[in-house]
Image (cartoon, rainbow, N blue to C red):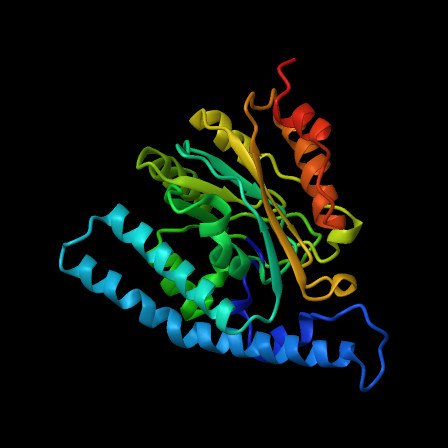
Length: 303
């Protein structure tokens, strides 16, 4: 997915494009100024430490894989867990943002297609750092579909490659413009997704297909691919909502929430798009949870 992670850019660009500020008045010696400084310096420190420690955290998995101790699927799952632990630990050491996690936990998690809104270059870090709390310690192994352009950064390439993430090649034509896919890459992505599902992995998709620079104004066009994957695999979809990452008005507070699964599924792609907009569009723009009546209407409807 376009610009899906901070690691694909230089530290200077990240510092310029991502702002974490408090809501206090903008005075030179005010708490707001201090918050901006802490946020920016903390962000830079976090990214720098990720670049240093993430490859080190993957060494045990790499060695065990080369020695034949782990199968391919086991190796990919271990690599993702190592990346998540690294992101989670560093966020505790360098708390440049305050993340509130609202989990959805199950004693017996079922095969699922996960979908989320895409509000910032920091999304990947938040998902990595919070996945254990968000989905539970007994969470199922997962693979993410991502924009192949991120492989230009060696850190992304190492983690995504070892975790078996599924890439898709498309033109870097700017946010807000229709995605232009490489046809052969698209077919390869479908084949790798089917294989991952057969091997027992959950699939994580960003249906907007690209970063949304103005989530407070609503979502980008919702692509129907996640619905097709869900229908073809006969797996339910489960929504994950993000709010506050990189959005100037809300400061350093970030929310991530896993919603209940869509038990009855969706009748067609249009209904999925409507549900995604109703639940995640509202949450992404305001951080306000949908009412229980709204969730029941979209996720438990049978007619």
